[in-house]
Length: 401
Image (cartoon, rainbow, N blue to C red; front, side, top):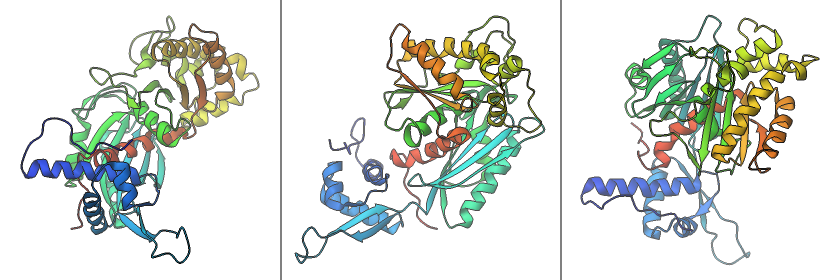
């Protein structure tokens, strides 16, 4: 079905309306080229529903911006006329930066306009959670590194484990980081002083869920739950292909569902899901302490290697079964993705969860899969988010200079 190039809402006249239509039409073509496929102008017109003249003008603009490469198409029959010209997206001049902030590490992923990874780095924090100044310094370093390659950043999104007001760019509450009412997006935008850079903040599980649906183990799924296991526990929910955010943008804070009784949680309550199945829950269940500077995945791998791991993890498995079966009843996902520290524990968790889901009220139909992106997921999703404004037609690609 051709994509609808028309802007939503009432029609308006004048330059602003014309610019908006052009941005949206350009975004339609960018999305068609995003997967790296080479297409002819005729194909782009047919698939987008746009006039051939409109497609030609937009392709010309994209060529001037340096984001389109042309190549001759293969001949269908030798000797019959000149071959047509195909165009494909060249993402090297523009990128999105994604930063995941967690209790004991910060991860950075930089993706070019096509979604190809330019680099990924993870830095461990040994002396408590990072503060906003450390995040700003890291963002500036990677922004400078990108500029040194001759590329420009279209956006920067920070993934944070906590309650996020995305519309304000504010961390409402991230108890594991000690951040409260933190205007992170404004603070970073002011500190980076990079005109045109779109700075955003989102929940880490939301970002990871998008990454898994676009580049990970759940590619093609439009209904899924991603469970992130680090020090805490959270969920990102994709429903109908969109991140489920709720009325205040606070959906997914399932780590504070009460699945236990008196286990203390960092939030000040007791019986929270993350108190039983997050890192503190693993320590309580196994007696194995976290080594200094050890990230949650490495710690979970040591837990999984214990000879009696299956027995020791029974309380954790029970908490996961209670939480996951409840989510499945309410959301009916096609797949539940286990991320972060749950990946090394997959041999124990996946069979137990699939058995419980299959025996539940709704019966079989939801699969459980370990993440293919691991601790990479949230920063990849944040970098994809940083490119969204361009692909949604909310901003234009910048011109050099």
